[in-house]
Amino acid sequence: MLDDVLVAIADPGRRVLVARLAHGPATAGQLAGLLPMSRPAVSQHLRLLREAGLIRATQIGRHHWQELDPDPLLHIGEWIDAITARHRKAPALVHEEDQL
Picture 1 (spheres, rainbow, N blue to C red):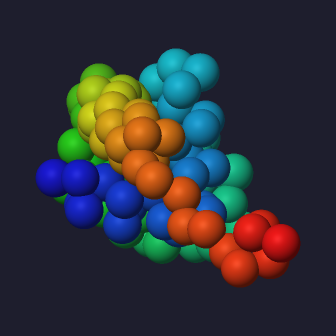
Picture 2: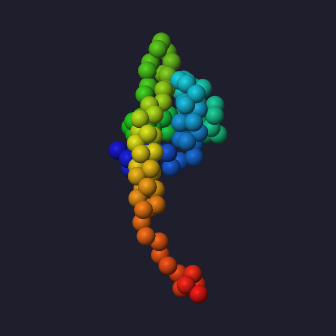
Picture 3: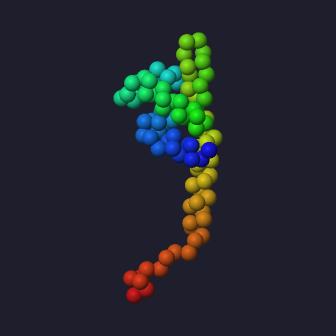
């Protein structure tokens, strides 16, 4: 799951979509206006974000609303926190120039 989320947010356009959805739900059409690409291309990005578990889609009438699910982002944050905490406790490499 972590790999899927990291791949999903590796693309700058998908990060724009995630950042927008952090402000609340939006339709696919509204989101398409944020990026300089075709609606089918935006739909593919949304599909990948859904498959990674980052967004949920709900159809209301004719509109497909997209909503952020922040849980996968929280898992990334926890992973980063664990790595940085481990690094802070790790011994540092001593360089020869530091010993002079």
